[in-house]
Amino acid sequence: AVYQIYIEATGAKLMVADLAGRENERTAGVSGRQLRELAYINKSLFHLSNVIQGLSKSKKFRQRGQIPFRNSKLTLLLSDCLKSMRTTVVATVSPAAVNDEETFSTLRLAQSLQQITTRTRFSRARSATQVTRRIISDLDYCRAPDPAM
Image 1 (cartoon, rainbow, N blue to C red):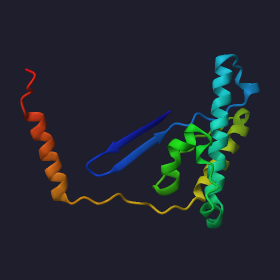
Image 2 (cartoon, helix red, strand yellow):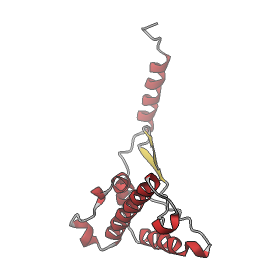
Image 3 (cartoon, rainbow, N blue to C red):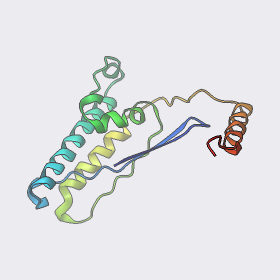
């Protein structure tokens, strides 16, 4: 699931993505629709790891535009975050021995994310006066009587 919050007054954006971990089809014990969903999740995570590997490579690689952001909906949604924003990743792993393969793949993905260097782009700064005027106009609009009533 991907949640996005955009604060218009400041131009800030907060994006939270819960990436359901990669599951092994053999050990998951699912079939039918759930198996198709599992395959789709794994495919999206595969494309995400390709994007991360491309971004963590040399600057020359990125300048040629070979980063495959459009290969999945997930990578397209996260493209802004991965290219030019401050990004924080929380990798959740399991201490159980039966989950060692998934734990190691999660840690490899997190390590690749650490190697990405970006330049944070700030949106056009608005003065305090502009923000105040905008808030006042919004309040006036809300206080105005509804002509339909």
